[in-house]
Length: 217
Image (cartoon, rainbow, N blue to C red; front, side, top):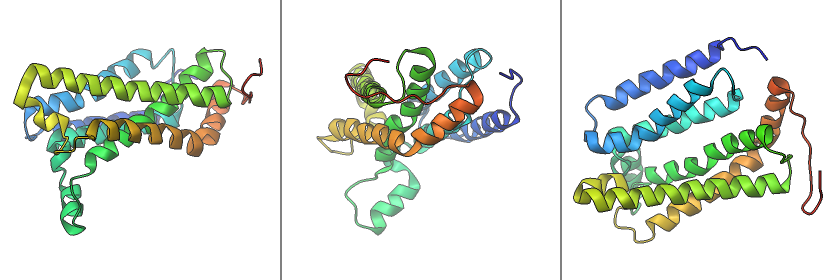
């Protein structure tokens, strides 16, 4: 495989830096901003550290960038005060700003493709129902762990974490967050698996191999 940096990936990195710079300029408050964008910064560090020896497909990188942009916008405004979704709330008489719901759908949708790629390339799993099930479980676990992080931050920082939690008075907010991540993970695999398989085959020589429940490879 060609190990030279891709021009496309350079563009993605440039977009990340530009959006991060905008996000960091006069955000709602820097405590909330840091909490929201920390996963994006950690993700970038991991990608840069592994880029030469474990390069992902273009689809995975583009989805990761999309996820980081969602995080950075949420960090700049806070999820409960994102202007476009405030306008939607006011224009359609909605009960809340729904931008955080978009973030939690992405929390399942994007990691599903990344987890899928890692499992296909590094584990004995083949494309099929078991892979679909395990990827879905991984995404749901990530969502649940993130909810625990929000809980720990809230306990340790008190009122300072209100903007980070963005529950907006919804007692079922945590359950909604995990449910939407679950839907996102399922949707990503249903919509993008074929394209993902094509990119895996072209870039890494991975052939699509389907298996059924109960069948051995």
